[in-house]
Length: 432
Image (cartoon, rainbow, N blue to C red; front, side, top):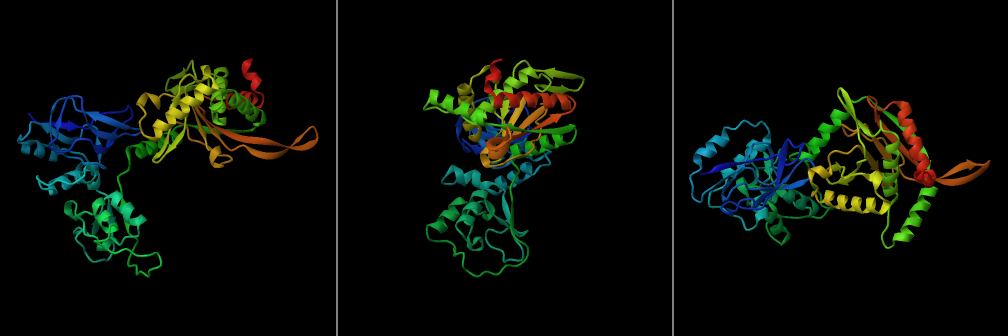
């Protein structure tokens, strides 16, 4: 008996997912517990497996489209089984997001026996991204409402190669321009390209392309709004002389060569040690309670294409520089590949965001609820200072801590920063 494939909950904070790719195509046989699709959640790309064997009879939501939790994204059953009743039932599902309507339009427009030469053409290229055009002649790839139908990857390729999309005939569903159409142009036929020196006439407003917001970007927007609004936040900034910390790094790297630790690894370790001395900073607000954590689980902000993710170094207060360094490198690599598991990026007790390597001298970071604080680390700059009545230079690094005033008072935050500063300026203190 045919059954609907529903969008599962693949992470604790997931409210919807985006189909990254279908591993299986319509008509493919599927075994129980076999991966059928990859889904982009709010933080990572997760594999979605089938709970039962069967045949993938229908793909409802194509690659590149979003689906809410519990929304039908496909149909699984026996080969040749009549699924017309299920399709009518799915059409009646009430999901207001475009992810539930646009995919059905695309799929219904495709003949049952139509197949593409590549899985990327059949799935990813059927994304609903489009270019809205002004007063221009309608082409084979332009819909009745004036939209030029084109997949995101095809639009990117066309832009990079200066291809005139008005002269491209789309071969995808409803005349959509897809990747192979642009490849045909690049191979020498099908449309006109031009140099950047050509003279063009522009009519009306600029064209634009709408793409579905990724689940990760939506969650980032939601969490930031939750943080900056209801959380009473204040900021504390301190300048730290980093010369001794840089000397410590050089000494450690000489001992562990060819491996190396970074300044950020030292910052993570010293922040964790400082948190053990100031439990209110290593805590979270829980409505009627304040939760104190016994270890410092440090979230380290990592930049990826769609925003920031904070993989966690668990128990950083108990680990050495080399172990922290290796863990951060491994976690950051998998974060950029969107391969982290939910438990690896949720549940930090304190976070650190370091933009010093990008030349940023000072900034403020937004607290990641329910954590009570986050540390924003700037670039260490060689700065003139007065010591013993003489002008000399020191490597000065500015750090700013954002504090949840429901948990951390001004004096408490200042005392934490004084401990953190003392450890970096005199690393031997951490042995006391």
